[in-house]
Length: 97
Ligand SMILES: *[C@@H]1O[C@H](CO)[C@@H](O)[C@H](O)[C@H]1NC(C)=O
Image (cartoon, rainbow, N blue to C red; front, side, top):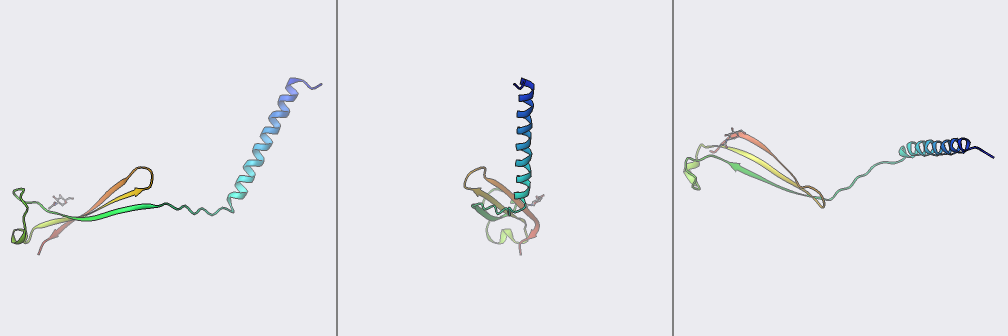
């Protein structure tokens, strides 16, 4: 009869052999796989013109003539599941005509 140590060694050898064959097969088949991830997202984007006024009333017309303003592009990326991602870019240094 085989001893416990003999059986344990045989079992360990079999397990390591199966693991090695699986690893080799995985790395061989990985070469034939071309990843093509597809994601459905919604992008909500808007541009805001931001300017400063002395008092916080809405200013229209000639009060804005020559005023400096920043254009800010905001975007919100909305995946079907998961966290909504939002960011913006500020383009500063514009002047109204
Ligand atoms: C435009 O943006 C710059 C920096 O991003 C800021 O210092 C400046 O106050 C902004 N100007 C206006 C009119 O909002």
